[in-house]
Image (cartoon, rainbow, N blue to C red; front, top):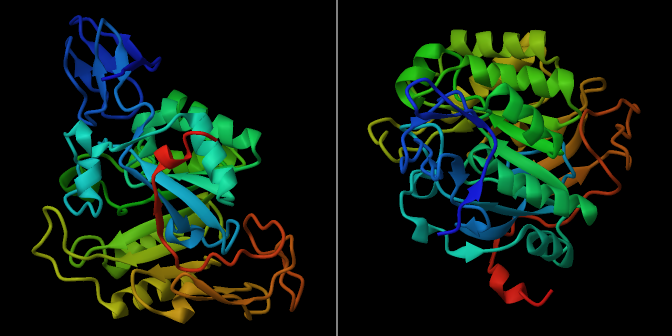
Length: 360
């Protein structure tokens, strides 16, 4: 198995090596892997085992990431690897993110090939998703560098669980991100995810204040765990104060999965309640997901209140923005990245095998 050297680590007094990519700070003896399973100690350094290998490639609508204010309607080439640096009991990609089997990584591709395939297939962007790109950041960065040579943007779908120095380098190469803010209590992060809330909030503030990365937030609402009105209110007030009103938030519905099979699905009414709270707090762009709700999926102008992007699942039903993102009704600038007319990819999900493009 190919392993490449990495740079975010240091020796500690015990003779172990501490990985400095994420706040877990795994301290490893020779031959040990970190909790993420894809970074480990080999020959007295931390190496990455999944460079160039993927669990599969698929062309998705950009709205599925979800990103509603970044190149609407366009196709995005998506892929992930294996492993994760959190241990969320409700993980809905657990077959990939919790994998300890490298044969999960069925497809191989160089960064250059990924960029060429994205260009050939008309994708406007490439997403690092399905599992968290933080743990394969060297591969993601190299892919991003190649994509930018072809005018293709890059998107990180992430939990934002990353340390400061690695964060700075990683986001230097990302054009957009969807950050999974899993809850707004330390108790939830510690008990359900095996992590901490503070580093995620630090990532969000860093993105807003120190980068030009377009980002949106997703919170999966789990009945009885993170769906109280008070917690939702606290989260939305923090977003307004620290990030401003223009960062979109997606409240999405939970379904029983992985180790959390004893909880019911999130009710539609819970999602509507969360959206109402967020709008009353003063957030401009609030969405609900994993349910069919055209009103909750659509974008409204904060100024004139008219619908400027209509959505039915992943289909754009209306579009009333100028090429640079101004409302056609009142000329208010809608926050986001808009570049020309919207795409027409629609709801299609198209799996592809990169080995079929090896001669590009």
